[in-house]
Length: 72
Image 1 (cartoon, rainbow, N blue to C red):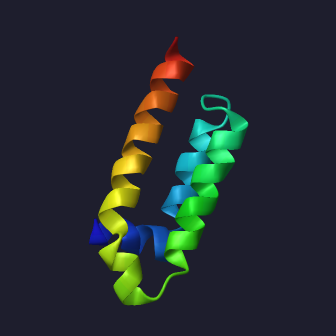
Image 2 (image 1 turned 120 degrees about the vertical axis):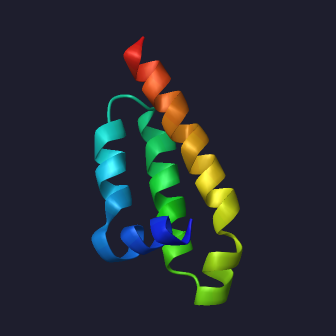
């Protein structure tokens, strides 16, 4: 998770993911998850890392649901 956090912070990997999910997930939910990730990245280091597991779990579920929805 810390490696994932690092590529989101330094390379914006989450932005590419959200671009890929456009049209596959409801727009409002996509923007909400995008905003949640950005808020997480803005937290102080200890809090950002301490609450990362929940974010990654929710992001994985969201991505899986969007990809399943988009393939049907």
